[in-house]
Amino acid sequence: PLWWGWYVLSIPLTWLFLTATKYTVEGFNGEIWSNRFIGFSIGILVYTVLTSLVFNQHITWKIGTQLILALGILLIQAFWPSK
Image (cartoon, rainbow, N blue to C red; front, side, top):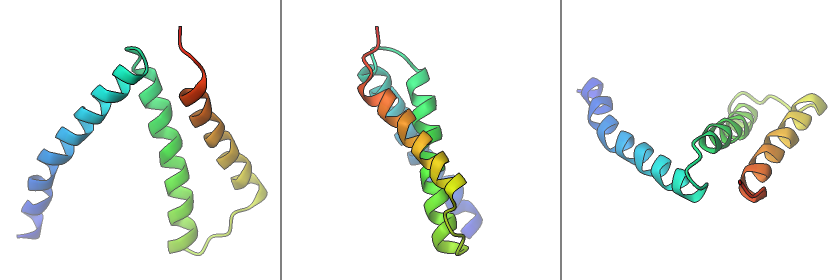
């Protein structure tokens, strides 16, 4: 019942993942490494927000510095021209 729902959802989610990868590779002039850094940085940002909300963990200076670095990676990928 609920177990099969994950299998059913995996098909459209895989299609969305591949489509998003295709568009970002096209957007970054054929470079796939940009996807890796963008995915990592967004994952760090989302994990921090959810940990803060769900587990009531406070953002310390160390975590804040890591968030700034993750944001810096996103900005470099978005605005630094490649080639």
